[in-house]
Image (cartoon, rainbow, N blue to C red; front, side, top):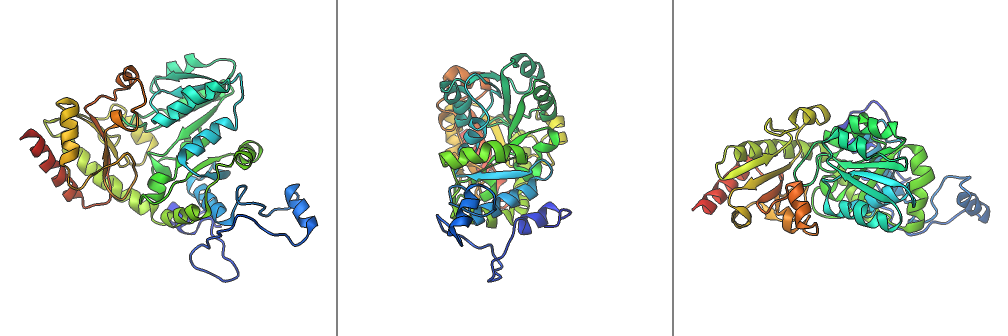
Amino acid sequence: MKKNWSAQTQLIHGGGSRSHFGETSEALYLTSGFVYDSAEQAEARFKEEEDGYIYARFGNPTVRAFETRMMALEGAGAEDARATATGMAAVTACLMSQLQAGDHIVAARALFGSCRYVVETLMPKFGVACTLVDGTDLDAWQQAVRPETKVFFLETPSNPLLEIIDMQSVADIAHAAGARLVVDNVFATPVLQKPFQFGADMVVYSATKHIDGQGRCLGGIVLGSQAYIKDELANFIRQTGPSMAPFNAWVLLKSLETLALRVEAHCQNAERVAQFLVAQDAIGQVFYPGHESHPQYALAQKQMTRGSNLIAFEVKGGKEKAFALANALDIALISNNLGDAKTLITHPATTTHAKLPDDVKADLGIHDNVLRLSIGLEDGQDLVDDFAQALAHVLA
């Protein structure tokens, strides 16, 4: 594989290997097991003295093609990778594979609800303490460090209000303390942001989102150094089994071929819709990293090439008006997913972050009047017109 290929070319050819049939599209290996030429060969593979596949829970050629293509896209720092059944399996496996009782995590408080559950509720059950901090406050990260701190964890942009965290500064604090930085890069995608360039030690994705991008299948992936993947993560996945299905890996491989094109179109539409929403009297604050009104706009410009397709905004009039606006949209669909070809809208306080206590939601700014948009691939003017008619309906 040529290392000097652009990202777009890597997305089409990276990780590709053909069988003796010479197929154009990557082969789909729907098999749970593999056979050996001899008992000696089987012994050698189990001893890791010979490369080769053993069992689909440990590895599969189609899954490996997806992992290799993601490594090529992510670039320097992504020396190896392991795919998982879901994005949350990726987060959980990444953290649990490197932590043990007595260790300590420092995590940004603005996380997807399930990610907060893992760091705040699940890990402490196994003796791993957690401290949540304001991710935008570098002093808070520094002050949270303990002698037993092993991992920093954050997502940027965050879910759902799109906070931007200074990855390089947080990485510097983590590394000075002998800890590692794990970055959930799902909102930005590997097209718009490369966390390894800003000091991340591991990067995780829900491939269910933009990487598939069409609402068809679940998947996740963890990328990191060869030593971490081989010595810590690979055996954890092998023994606990959150493995990606070969069919899902094949679907994701095909999706990667158009990822860069889709992300660019997503961003163009999102910029247009954000500009429209900012100018509306019925809308309060708009949170979009690609618009100059965002409080961390300068940092977003430094870390991301564009603002992504996620927008959050406040609707004046509270939950009733927010629900009315969502219900009045014709194109945007009410769904808790994101990164889809279709524009999706969700009310985080009652869906993705519903399990958080009311005081925590208030502290995070996840109020009843907040909606989160995942802008799709429809015509941009149609999307603006849809919001215009929905706002007119709500204000009538």
